[in-house]
Image 1 (tube, one colour):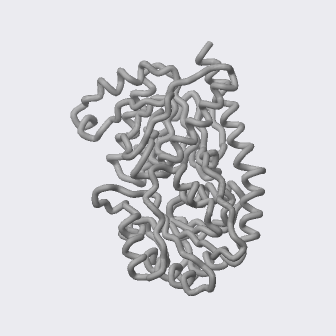
Image 2 (cartoon, helix red, strand yellow):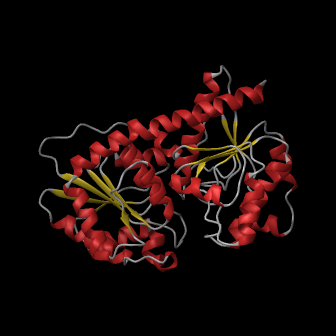
Image 3 (cartoon, one colour):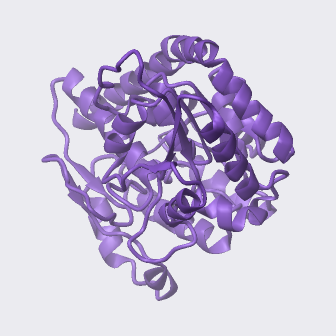
Length: 380
């Protein structure tokens, strides 16, 4: 399981990993087989492994720089099937040459192992230079099959000239398990969850946003906090033990101090715990896509705040237009979009329900059935 990870810091990758393994486990059971899953991803923090999951090696930058990849190669050769989820959207040029190169080398070794390589549902690209497109095309053309999670990725795959078997499905995290919502008293406050991305709050300029992300969140907290019978909860989805620009939690504490009465959700151990908290909210907005998927797939009305095309591609594929595009709207327009979503919660709930029934669940069934066929072929 390439680029899969259980535990913190990034609960989005944890959600992808747990969901994908749940789907593949069900696929194996459907053909009367059992599977063991080896995680070839950066080890997380505060996590427990399922009985059929074990940790494999992770190829680090220093090993890449010194060409010390033998252990990684040898462990890959022991696998009957290699499934690469690329941490959801990691195989792209937008995060820099180093990360692209690290992804490319892991995929090269997977191809050289001789085992079938499948790309699990993910964002494809963008690949912004000739050399990254050429390398990506070479890799995808040697995969047994590639699954995309949105329509924009389908376009990117075709535009780069890739010719290997391909299918558009949906993000696997729509299958993430969670505990049902607790019973709610008739006079209970309306609970609004706001996921504040620490990365966007501190370094939003690197994403060429048209909104002032920090100001947007301050205004949302102030406006929701001023509404009668509304309780504001700040929710993190990436949290580290050490200082890190990507960490959501310190920003939440800073905002809670600035806005007395605002509540802060706990640091979740894993994505299932986070989703089991989010399902108890009445409305949600946020800058972390998998926090928003957690809300959407548990039918909590949500207005995602998009900072990249992965949001637009995914939610447009679902036929869900309620996205505040942080690369097109100004701050006033984004605030208005989120507040409008709050006031139209019943409509958002109905549209999310329809999208789950008509798009997400059927597409995940297509993926599961395709993987069952491939597992049957591998096991033969």
